[in-house]
Length: 152
Image (cartoon, rainbow, N blue to C red; front, side, top):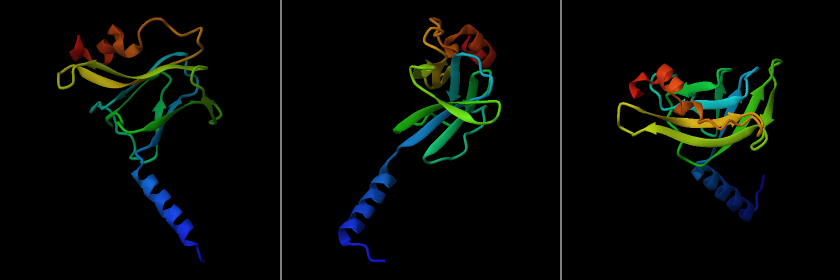
């Protein structure tokens, strides 16, 4: 097959750009029957399993408890975030920001390098009317008591 030189140059340039791009998609997949409330994904916790190695797509499986953790550190490159709810029949539907997903953000509790430090991502799953005015679960005494007693 004969490819004109301009096309070969464009293909080579596109390949170079894609190989240099530190972009990936983080997908937060909620289990069937997940109740509305704050979702907490703790990252960099050595007592938790690692996420499978992935280059362009990482799926965080979130159980009905709305709490998940991984020993994999928080990704610091460019990324896109998607949210899904798995239904009882196994199919998933995408959840939209400002519709059923609110206030997604990175969090950190304590000071890095100290005995009490943990971090990750949290967001509220539910309607705007349900959005609680209480702090996300990671900041609560209950979460610290059950997951990080060293922080009490």
